[in-house]
Image (spheres, rainbow, N blue to C red):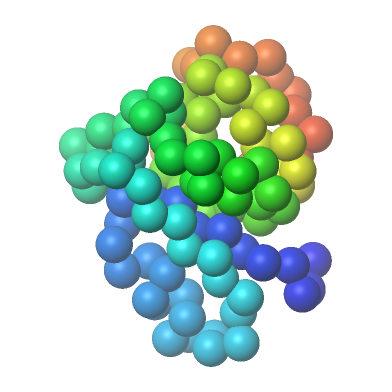
Length: 113
């Protein structure tokens, strides 16, 4: 998938910076929205509070880096919000929130951890 923008929507503040530092040519789109707060085990996310620009960016994202909790909440809220998603890279090894979410699996995209 070379050339595709990598959308980063994460509570891990330094993740985009680390990715950019490791490869400055990575095409990153870093999303920030007040609906996503906290860090790690204290992540708070309410997708109903997402701003319109964030919703548009998520709908356009083909490659997404995010927490499993955030992905699960997005899909529970509106499965079509990730309309173009082809690959999601989890920021955590544990992806239980996705499998415990009230969503239909399988999806038309790849999840890696």
